Length: 85
Image (tube, rainbow, N blue to C red):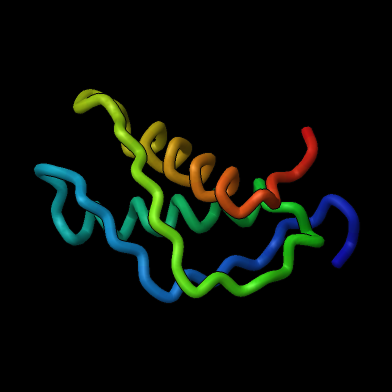
């Protein structure tokens, strides 16, 4: 992969508990999280992870974008593959 290009992220299953959110909201959030992970993970971070559990508390008034940012950042931190800024 070229330096600076986005990674490819495949998420087999993403379970979210978001009080008051519909399935459609959850699908949109999952898509946003995947997109942010592809942008934030290092292209050399090619690996398979059997499972990963991350708890990400967010404020009730947080936007979907802020929630996706927080989830993606927490997952990237756990994977240890965040791109150098």
